[in-house]
Image (cartoon, rainbow, N blue to C red; front, side, top):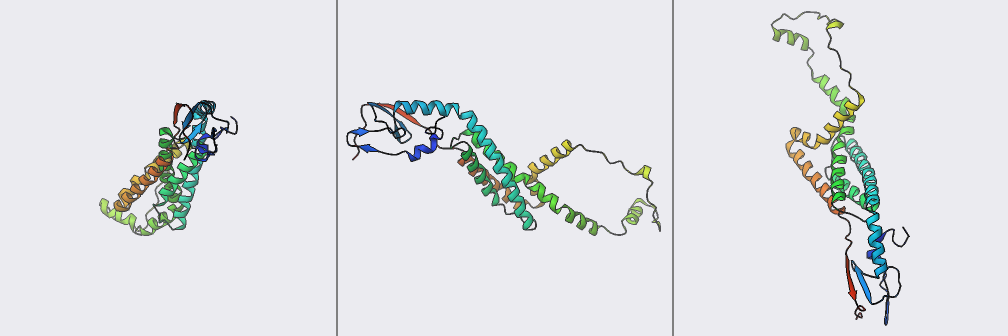
Amino acid sequence: MSDSFSNPTPQFGTAEYVTQPGSYRCQFCQQPMGGTYYRVNAAMACPGCTEKMRTEIEQDKHAAYVRALAYGVGAAVVGLIVYALIAILLQGWVISYMSIGVGWLVGTAMMKGSNGIGGRRYQIAAALLTYAAVSMAAIPIWIHFAPERKQQTQQQKPLEEPRELERESGGQPSEDPQPAPSAARPQVSVVSLGTWLGRVALIGLASPFIQLSGDPFWGAMGLLILFFGMRIAWRIAEGRPFGVYGPFANSPPASR
């Protein structure tokens, strides 16, 4: 596509409104206007420019969507990393308002990739990428704090746990409990990398709802703010309208 029409949507807002007494020009190619003209959004366009923009935008729809997805995935990864880093630096305190920033980042990146072309499929992709980025940020956070949680759990275990188990089972506690033979130890099942990654992904995607069981109030607040972040991404990905009106016969009325 030529440079004049490779980015038609932003040009709609920056078209040059050049008029001379007795002469009207297309606000895209600056050629004198004939007896028929169109309105592309608010800009005056000649029939040639209007048809060319229609054709090129129609041909560019698939490529624009692919570019928007690529930009959106990149923005979601950046948002995930920033979200997790801030939570780790704050020692586990997660600022849920960061979900709004992630939604803005994803929506803006997708519109940058599509040159302003938006629509329903762009909105759905932006909302899903925002949810995925925020929810999956819980995985690196949990991994980072896992050793501390494990250490705290081990410290909370009573030192006399084997003897307590024996008392509950009705036996007499032994002075020197012998370790179980190796043959009686449970076998550890080997999980493939793909299975492990799948489980981790499912846990991450469910993390906004898992937090409800730990702290219902803050879990609900986190879900609500995440919804607002997805809503922002949805609105941004709506894109700019491309409306063609006309044709209009005769010369346009003189401006006052």
